[in-house]
Length: 140
Image (tube, rainbow, N blue to C red):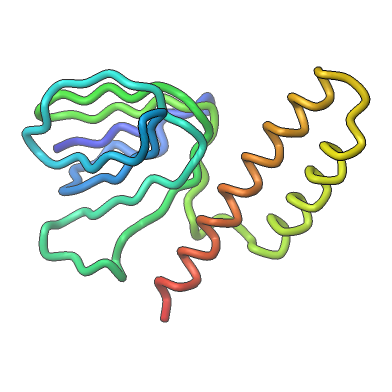
């Protein structure tokens, strides 16, 4: 099946894949070729991609995504999100520092607007850190 991962900056992936694990508002779902058609919400989390059926788990690729929309047909999966960062592009130390700043911002928020923005940043950097850790474990 074809994976189209599209961000605000353009197409991140347009490639044939065998399996996807995608975070949705109902929990993670696994998608394989021939999946029933579905449209659902993506939530911040990690997308796991297996390109070939015989690829071991150590060859999975990871992407940190923000929320968005997922459209699944039997031959295509379209994931439309604001951001998608490949695990290899995330620097773990930077993500830890950014998460600490976001938590501090959340704890010091003085109104609902600041709190909502801080929570969004905490979610974003938590996901990026999770993907960085998954990528690190994949290498060993």
